[in-house]
Image (cartoon, rainbow, N blue to C red; front, side, top):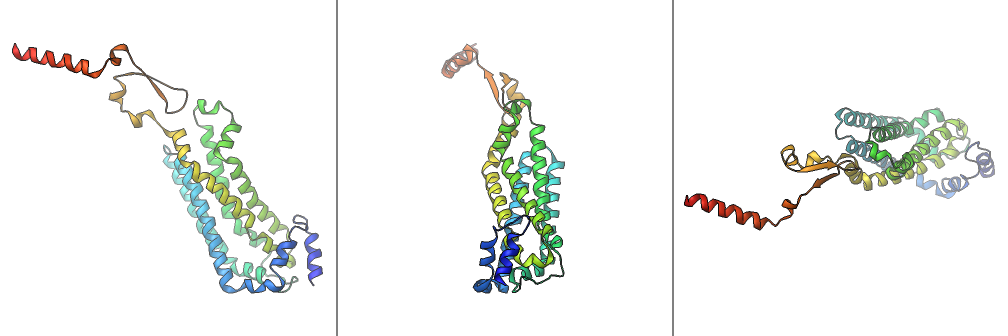
Amino acid sequence: MSIHGTNAISQHPILGSDTGLFFSLWTGQNLHLCGNLSIIADYFLTLTVAVFCQAVVTLRVWHLFLHSCFIRWLAVTVFIICAVGAVIVTSVEFDAMKRALCASSIAEIFTQGPLSMSTVYLPALVIHTVMLLLTMYRFRISPKSLQQRGIMHRFVKEGIFMYTFAAGSLLYEIICLSMTEPKDISIYYPSLIGGIAISTTTVSVCRAMLSIKSFTVTYHVDPAWLLNHAELSRVQWRRGASEGEIFVESSDMEADPPSKFLEVSTRRTEGEGVA
C-alpha cells in the first residue's frame, strides 16, 4: 500500500515526487497527530493567521487612500466579505479536510470533490487580488514626480512582487486541488494544507507592516497639514520636486537677529509714550 501511494504521488501532473516527505509525515506512525484537538487547533490557527494577514493588507490600502472615502470603505467591505466567506467555507469543508488529513487508506473516496475543497483558498485570493489592483491604481494616480523613477522602482519599493507571489501561491493551491482526483485527495491534500500560501502571505504582510508609515509619508504629506493658508501667505514659498516638499525663500532682513527688531520696536513704543 505504501509503495502504491508513493508511485501515485510521483505520477501527479503538478506535484511530481516532491510530496514524498509530506506523505511520510502524515502516514504510518504519525497518524496520532490527526487527533480531533490537533486538527481543530490547526484549523483555528490557520484561519486566524489568514484573516490577520488580510486585515493588514486592508490597513495598508486604507493608509494609501486617505483622501478617498469610497476606496477606503470599498477595501473594508471586501475584507469583511472575504473574512466571513473564509469562515463559512472552511467550516463547511472542515469535515472533508479532517478526513483528508486522517485518512488511513490512500484509496479512500470522499463525497466532496477536490474542486469543492479548493474554494477554501478563494476568499484569500480575492482579497489579495483586489488589494494588489488598488495598490497599482494608487501608483497610477500618484503625482508625476513620483513616477519619474520608473514603475519597476515603485514595484520593488512597495513590495508588489511579494504580493504577486503570495497571490500566485494561493492560485497554485487552488489549481493543484482542482486537478487532483477524488480518490487521491487523501494523498495530496496534506501537502496542500496551505504551508506555501500561508508562508508567502505572512512574509508579504510583514513587508506591508514595516512600510505602512513610509508609504503614508511619501504619498500624503500635504503642506496644508503643516502650515495653514494664513501662515503660508506671509512667506515666499514654492513646491519641491517631491510630494509634500516646499522651499521657503528668506531675505536678508529675515536673516537679522530677532533681538535687533525687538530693540527697535521697544524704542518706538517708548517714544510714542513720551509724546
